[in-house]
Structure formats: structure tokens, C-alpha cells
Image 1 (cartoon, rainbow, N blue to C red):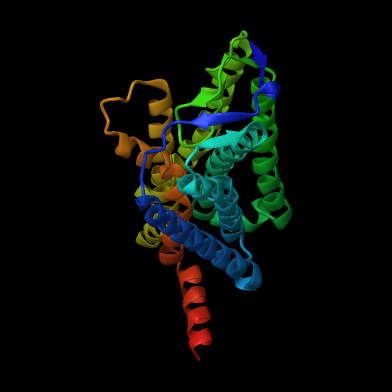
Image 2 (cartoon, rainbow, N blue to C red):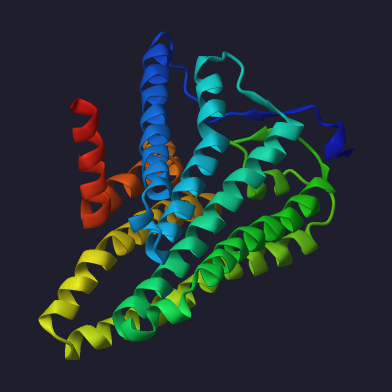
Length: 309
């Protein structure tokens, strides 16, 4: 038995032997990362620079886009390095840093989507009290709570994993995951397992409750409300629902893959889907929000038109 601090690196075994095709995959992944950074950064700058977009909905969206950049930074540079490398290893410190980054990214994403659903509930169901209930101070407080809550919660998980004595250093994945590091433990993992159940419950059901509450209220108002109310709900809620479904799909597959035997699924499909919530969500959100929200769409159009002139 060796303490995790004595293991210099972990070996990642899910990478395929790509030969010279690795350079093609490198270019594809690099281009995807560039598009993600540009699309998210462009919308963040647009929201920050335009005073007409300094509304709660767009401020929450800005927080969501910042999280896309944060999560992408935890995966893409590492993935680019691994694609061109012949030995797929990661140092102990970088492995734990990657775990922390990716897990907090997922938690912030869900919590942010929960706060955004509450924002839509107030805007549609309580339009007269919307500005009074969501002041700039309350918006800042909600965003701070989302980030601080997620950062602290997974700091505890990381500490519990770091203290374990490990029997090996082979991780059958493309990137470091807390569950697979814990499986390498020789020491008792009871505390880790209990805390893992608690954090899973908090991460999933914590955001799910306000989301279900908000959309139940919105649906009720749409049923009895006017056509204008229904149109407003569809135009502002559809990007949020699409983002939530897209992210939930990727997360569910990753959870199922780590807990159940997925050998019946082709390996290349498992690899693609394991990266889904980390690679597709950061490019999906800027596109769906940029296309569906009229204010952002108009601002983006004006930006490009001004540059052409």
C-alpha cells in the first residue's frame, strides 16, 4: 500500500492507437477549442459592454458562459497534449486538479441552470415584482452562492480522495475521474462512499427541485395565460430547456458508464459520449442562446455589421 502522495503519476488507458491520424484529431480538437473560446468570450464581452443587456437573465447567462470557459480549460489543453503523446500519463497533482476543475464545472453548470429557471419563473409568473425581487445585489449574491457552494463541496471530495492509500495508478478513462481514483484505494473508502452519495444527491436534486418548481409554475401560467405570455415563455425558456436536456444527457451517460458495465457499447462511441458534456455543452450554449434570444442576436448582428463597415 502506498499513499497517494507517493504516486508520481496515473496512467490513462482509454486512448486508442491512432498512428499518424493523431495529428488530424489534434487539429480537429484544437479548432473545436478555439471556436468554444471565441464563441463564449464574444458573448461575455457583448453582455458586459452593452448596458441594455445588464439584466438578470443575461447576467446569469454570462456566469454560465464563464463556466464553459472554466470547464473547457480543465479538459482541452490536457486532451491536446495526450493526443500527440505516445505515453498517456498525468502527474498526481494535475490529476487531482483536473478532477476538481471538471467536477466543479458540472456542479456550477447545473446550479446556474437552476438559478436561470428561477429567473424565468419570476419574469413570467411575477412580472410586476420581477425587478424588486431580483435586484442587482440579489443577482450577484445568487451567482456567488452558485460558485462558492460548488467550489467548497468538491474541495471536501478532493480532500477525502487525496488521503486514501492507493494500490495502483491505472485509470481506464481519457481523463481523471474521482470515482476511478477511489477504486484504486487499498484503505477503507466508507467515508468517501457516503460523501459521494451525499454530493451526488446535492448536485442532482439540489438544482432539480427549483427547476421543477419553476417550470411547474410557468406551465400553469401558460395554460391559463394569454397568447403573448405563452410566446414569451417559449422564446425565453426554450434555450434554457434545450441546454438543460443537452447537459443532462451527457452527464447521465457518464454516470451510467462509470457505474454499469458498458462493454456492449462500441468503444469509440463510449469515448465520444464520455466527452459529450465537456465538449458539446460549451459550444451548444453560445449557439442556442445567441440564436434564440432576440436581444443577443441583434447585438451580435450589429457587432459584425459594424466590423464589416
